[in-house]
Image (tube, rainbow, N blue to C red; front, top):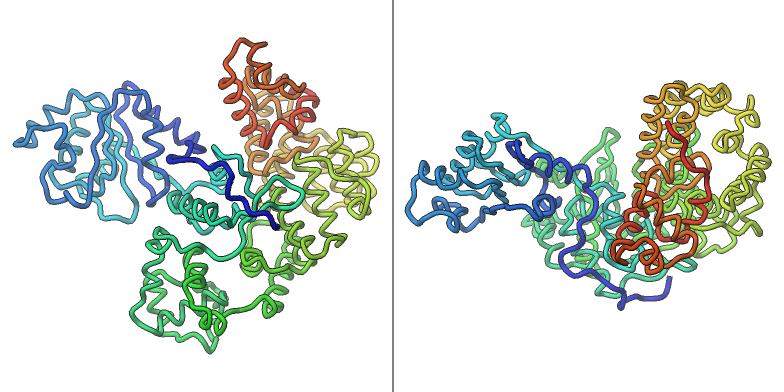
Length: 603
């Protein structure tokens, strides 16, 4: 990775609204005619205000907001709506005629404004949309809105990793590689304002570099200590007690540490744990509680202090081998649910070289979980310093072939395994060749490609159950297999089993349920494109999106499509963007293969 990118197009404030489709629809329904409204709660920076602003766009909405400076001034939040001297009774009368009232930062309301909001909810003539932040003291009159069941409550969760990735690239021409997305998502901890601040600083500092042979950009190196980052980490950076700061820094440079480590004082740890700054798991491993704190403490340490405390890449061998062994054990146990492996992530973040054996195993673990682009990124990390490593090349070929990100080269080291050859043929659309080679490598590939007879008596556990259910065309059994695969973390395999169940079900309702489940699982698999999912692809689009996608796959430009369908170029672009989001495709390069697949059959 060598090319710095300072001239990349970058979004001006605010970022495009992305994700939260289900929550957005819920908020809109809650403030529709005949509804009483909604309270939206969630952690700071989770996007609550942006969500409700998007929901009320185009409506006749009156706004009010609490502020820290006016908490002692009666009716301060409603000063622009009420006369200077007003009683609570009169305030309720004056605002009863408002159809929709949005109250932001309701945890900062003065007592009189909080009582007014509560009384408006009691009267029920004004639809209320109230936003408040978790963890902050809330006036009793506000908390009783949902505790007293006057208004329903939406507890907004942190943005999922997949939607964070979509947000990070929305409105830009920059595609971030998955390990960079994962790092930003971890550091942000669900705070979208912090996420944006980090990415803006990384971009402005020229720290995004091009990943060779891709259109992706990666960030390696220290965390920029922006004012927002320092504010979020002030309670760890500004420790008054020297022993607490020393303990936090030692963890920052070498976590996790065992409780019996010479560097850790138990009384100091107890104090830090009580403040929620460190955590101790059942095995006694001690870590910093927030993913941002370690990188910030490392970045803030002076050069000499960092040299004294640092666990340098050449001293990570034992910890890295322990992670590798734990991952290998989980794969052997057919359980690929998320597992903590911070040492490898730390090495990648620092830009240090990874041992190829570790990189290939991380790639395999990610691929089995259905995180195909992440798998490709781990494989590339191994190939960065060992260009011809066969295991990393094979993992890169498998991830690329199954993700719809292109057809891997069938020549060379990557095609040395039958598995790579099988999926390379599938990616080219040569399913006959894929099925012919499937039984010669991993027998489970044959099941995934719809030829369970080639895997007869060669599988065990849930994989054998999958083969048997598919051979019998047993829809309910395939549903059960899909649930078990999902429970074990094999999201792509679960999506494929559900997709196969669609055609096996005789009950149309069961088939529709299986299709919905398969599509939902596939969307979590980073653009997975395998034959088992082919019948779901176009069925995920609206009729207009299918029409536009088909024309785009035939090579027509947005302007040509607009002229043919009598639409604006912008409308065509919006439809294509929506289609890419649903299909998990990055651009129109993957569309020809997608639309040549058989159309979905009626359930």
